[in-house]
Amino acid sequence: MKYFRLFLCSTSVVIHTACAGLVANISSSSHKEVVDITTMRLLPLLLCLTLIFSSHSHAETGTVLYDQYEVNGHPGFLSAWAVHGPLDKVLLIVPGFDTKNDSMPIDELYDDFAMVTLFMGLYGWDVIYFDYLDGAMDLTANADNLARFIEYLDTQAEPNYHLAILGGSMGGIVARTAFAHENSSMGVDTYVSIDSPHWGVYLSNWVGDLAGLAIDYEAAHQMHHGDPAYAEHYGRLRNIESSPYFKNQVNGPMNTCAIALSDGSEGFWEVSWHDQLTHNKYYPVSSYFKQSGLKSTYMPYHSTVYLDNYTTEKKMRFGYATYKYRSQNSSYFDKTIANPADEHAAPRYAIIQALRFILQNRPQVK
Figure (cartoon, rainbow, N blue to C red):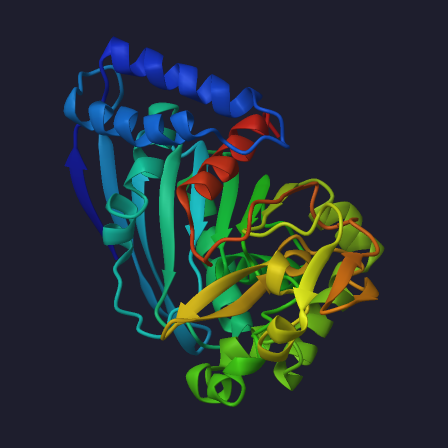
């Protein structure tokens, strides 16, 4: 069932011009550049001004809620849409792992992702926040939810509309799973993942058996590197993705980008004996999470950018070991973006990097 709430949202010429400059900055920056702090600070300021100083230079914005509580016998999905006009350019946000399942898409759309919604809306993009009724169930079931949602979106959008998917953490794996299980791009033009575990999650040694209690959910087991459920799910994905048809007809036509909240792309990294006892060899090149004052590795660089070969070279040193990836090639992603190691989340700079890639690769008419 759909629910509509209409409101006016537009900008003054001054703010529109300022944002146009920001778009030019985002679109033209080189892929190796990390967004400077001035740009990161300007984006929320400009978007706040956009909201406050609105005129009638843009069409009405409508909010649409579309939910389907059951899909093919499993829990379904929720969604909230910020629609600025005909659905001809759509950014679809797919979130990560969630055991509480207590958030509402409309709150995410106009709270955590308010800046994205407003910014993309200025340039004619409609933004949809897709969410799961059960954010911890089988990845394949939520991939099925995403695929069925896109089928519905196809019936509402303009012919040959442009579709970009932004998947955060598990959201990137849900989208990747959907591509594999549908053996289709489902009309997606651009696919960006932010700190997604394409080779799984690697927890530090100190987590130990606690992980079995804390992540005793189907999706968590499927993403936990070394778990039998991981081997089954990811093995199935890689089997499909290795086929010539998938490479040429599914992955090939899409613009793809993987953003890492870590960097193992250049040189060696060092791990002390002490750190290697409590963590693992990817400790310096991994995003992390904190619990009770302790820090654990989470998504190593090779996982988040989906390196084809994540084997390493190792050299022993007094008091520490050094490692280096043997290869930096990712045949799945057209572009990979490294960042200094950070806490696993969706930081503003990573969102800007994602929007930059999406705007740089605005697809032409299909």
